[in-house]
Length: 306
Image (cartoon, rainbow, N blue to C red; front, side, top):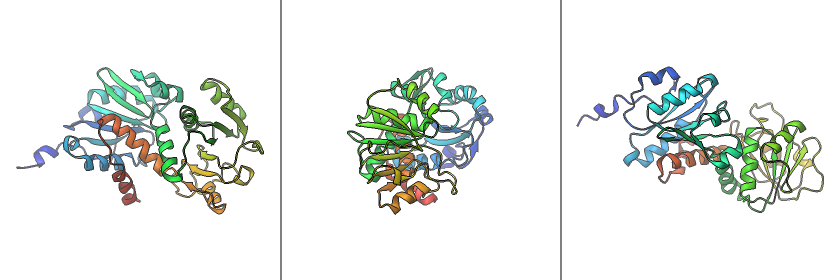
């Protein structure tokens, strides 16, 4: 049997596509995609296609692609993707918030997080979900042996990643969230966006942490962008915060940020965001396939790539 008959029309997964490519899309099986701008750096196609290959069977013809979609093209792109049988979509910068107004339905927790990163195909449009919260909670357990439930959580930053993390921690019954940021105005805006102040959420300026009130042995999560550049300083001085922290930095490239370096100097358990990336991706793939996802295949694919 000539297998090339069945594979010759499958677009390659190792390139970046544009919205124009959807005009003559010719993948014979279900398609998945990540949309962003820029997107060439994304590891999502690598880890998802590795998992799909491992899953085999009914998923052997599924493929995951990267599309560079500027924000003004997102509405048109979602329509074209739906027509072309893209059964699942991941969204990254700058689309997570804008897509809230473009989905047919939305998960209540994702709505509270103020962003969607996972779209599931319905008959008329897409259903929006957010797997970032699951990703961070699972990563904390895997890398640091840390459980959100009952813990004090220090979150640095007041952007979209921070909001999703705050909501996840509150949903998972943390004892309290201590939210720090340089801009107090942004802190106040974030708190208002998720329902206003309450006894389980307290804010502080990064330059003036609440001395003696945050318990030792808390979990610290960096949700800022400080660390993306090798020359970036740490978003906070760990020596001005409680002792014996467990430190998780959502940044995974570079693998060692200034924050993580300081944590290791203090002998604090610490980890970067690679595991969050994998676990949020695995949750998305489970939503699309309703099958058990081989998470280890995803980790192996990243290790082979690096």
